[in-house]
Image (cartoon, rainbow over all chains, first blue to last red; front, side, top):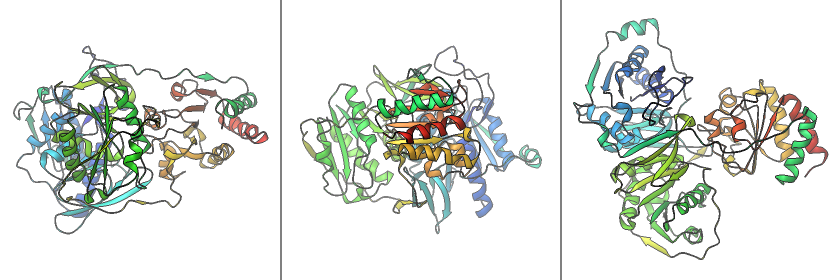
Length: 252
Length: 316
């Protein structure tokens, strides 16, 4: 299962000197959508056996996210590390994952839907393309469907869902909120210290930002979209004014 | 030439997001061609031909009866190879998010996702959950660029132009590796909120499930649909299919009334394209007021009943 370490939810995000990225001096955590993917992987293992390996592409700090995954129950972890990692676009990140696991055999590769930082929402699907494996996104539920097949429930738009069957190995991106994420136990944290965490450098696998197909030129504060008319007065007065606006200006 | 990939709804109608994507493409200046994938001939191509596009490309194949990412990617690779566009724009829908990264990667091109505007050769997209905007461009200016257009970022307007020529493009996708069953709705009362003209949404500020009734009364008085932000649906106070936001539905109604919603970015991305936004919240600093046209700072438990009374006493 692939996960990313991102700035913690309440972290103040200030521009770095390059105007293209965010300063690194904040707290980091496992990207929440990926935490749901990890939880899904752990539950699949509990129900059907097998092994869960966690992989991340990130600078040195990201090993903490892998330690956490191991403490929660992952069996082993792979850290694709390098200072350039935060500057990789989704294609280059997917290349890094694919090259780092070359030669390994997985039944399922799970990721979150998107990251809460860059929010590209593409890395999982691109990993599938690079592996030549089928994929399905926004998954709510996974069940085995005979040998080397899974049946998954996808969320569509407008309150619709769909069951899809696909052969393994396959890549699935997991919808957030589908399960309750577990906490690491003290025992788990202790055991994690003895679980294998292998490190591969971006340099070793020949991945760097020159592979990027898209470039973030600069970050800037979002343009405030509107001038808001504030409606003053007591509750009754506010309600009367608003009813008038709704009736006449918006012409319901 | 720039290409727009059209998404259809299951009922054989255009997804309104497709018209928004055409509007976005027209802003780029170059001629716009629309691509329609369909299993058999429908009136959709003729309808599209009048939406202010230069050309409609139709790929017709029995395998296109039901969406599957691999079949869509193979077909679009053929259409794009035929049309040789500079850019390919797609609506940022769930379906597009499922196949577009694969399509772009197969064509050795970037996919710039969730675009809200253009800046020269660059694209503007939100990052860090909307806390920052980014200007993003293709690393190689020679490649074709794929971009998905955020729902509600551009105003789709049915154009009354003359009919553009329609051209059939041959596609030959191999059978899908996936077996996709028919889409279904889980909750009986499931509504497609994206089609609602008026939406009244409740947030954490309503405090208790019984206070939903208050918001429901306002929705009834306005003749609108009831919706909510994520915490309300996560708590089970309203079914998930009434959730607005990045993990729920994206809407752009004529009127959106936010009651007790602070306006976290995950909610804002789902509704900020609404034509008129009214926010009622006790906190004057709440981010919802940044996107609201009309703001009421006050106690919703007093304002909402008064508003219902005022609306009912002299209906529109």
